[in-house]
Length: 142
Image 1 (cartoon, one colour):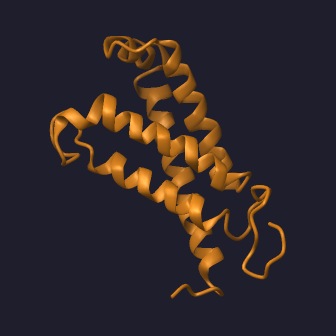
Image 2 (tube, one colour; image 1 turned 60 degrees about the vertical axis):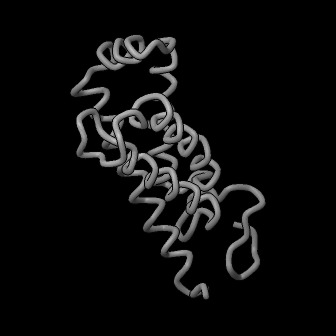
């Protein structure tokens, strides 16, 4: 049973925590690995380096959108697809545990599931711009 009175706040906590995680994750790419280093890493995987720029943009803009609640539930979908891509292209071959060398696929899989949960729940409380067509528990748009 869903607690209608607290569900919007649960979605808020989930949304903001996911957003902060994405902002921390993209900060690692930008400030530690550096953008040229991350682009080079993508090239070493046999991927077009241009995709690295798209990943950085998705994580940066997606993280901001999640924290602020700007179409957050819809932004969760491409971020979930990105996590699926990291499982298939990077972490899947390293085994289950993320503590394995190169990081396994448990953490990206969990992250992907939480993003799908956010999509299903909606933007939650205090969203600046709820996704169109979403309804609050009271039945009003937003």
